[in-house]
Image 1 (tube, rainbow, N blue to C red):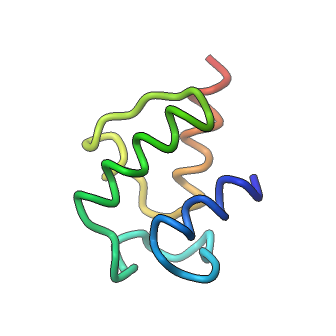
Image 2: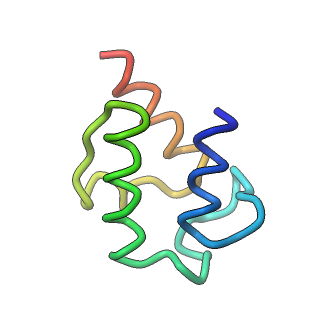
Length: 73
């Protein structure tokens, strides 16, 4: 979980991610960041998402729950 939030913070170019904050409120939340996130999730957590999947998650906590659910399959 710590690695997930640290990696996400690096992608978003922030010091730390607030798990409850809406992802689309981060300045760097754009299509390029989403593509980088998809690559990171596949490489680091072994899960595959499409951009449309990522856009359905509101917060970092929601995204983490989705990653954990997909990894459990």
